[in-house]
Length: 396
Image (cartoon, rainbow, N blue to C red; front, side):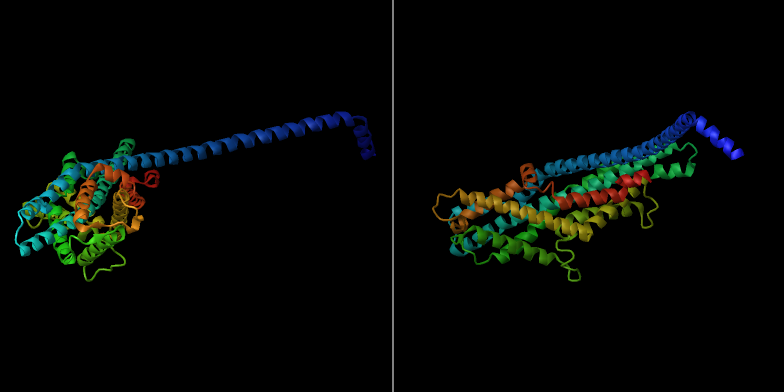
């Protein structure tokens, strides 16, 4: 009875009920859609903020690395004239050529010719090692400073935001701040003229022994010249390799190829210890910071990674040298093919001397690709990140 009455009511008002149901259902759907869009928008906005923050951090890091890389190149370019002057003093050939023009006795003439050959090749190799080594050392020192200063900047910003910070934390932060004096003293260690003299002397002795018996009238083509330079370099680096070291793992240890630069870092530490006494209690805060920077730089230059990067730089410089020699041989007035063209060693030596001078120039740094070497930039970026320059550290 009741069901029949309800059925008749539905049949009588079915149009109104259908319209009301549609309105209620549509309204519910619209409310549900509005709520999802609002909540999704809020989640999207928060995620977008995180992405923007990460992007800005990465852009800041990239800008920091580019700026530091340019500073490294400019710093090394400023050092190159001093290195060239030092090599002029240590491996100059003016006195030798003047004595040869005086037509000395045959035995003396042979001795002078040996010295002339040895000094030419030694100067070329010394220029390669000095340019590549100075660039690597500049990247280590400047990126080390950049990473620490970036961390120092963030620590200062965090201390300013945290008003309830502990006073001891603030004192500890100030204790590790790097002053301008420390920066100047630390970067002053990059003056590589002192190590060039040691390097030049070792290379002259090495080239004198390896080039013995070469006649200045012998013909040299591109292949023979490149082979001789490669043999001189490999032999010299093999002599520097310590007996207990792994030659495969560390093919060109920076600390051994640049012994005087490493010594300047260690001498700085020993000087600080002498001034302070054996127990080190007299060291000032800046002295302790400089000691820390010296130790860190020395450890980085001794690393296997630094040796690999230096080998990459030396290989790149060798390829650039070959391009210079190739251009010279291409300019010879000869119908022979490029690899069949030859010059007497007497005419090759001036080419080697002029190329050594080119090596120690800003032009060579830019055109050879040394300043933009991928391995060097990656090594520098890893150093920067390990000392606090990574954006992921900044966000943590």
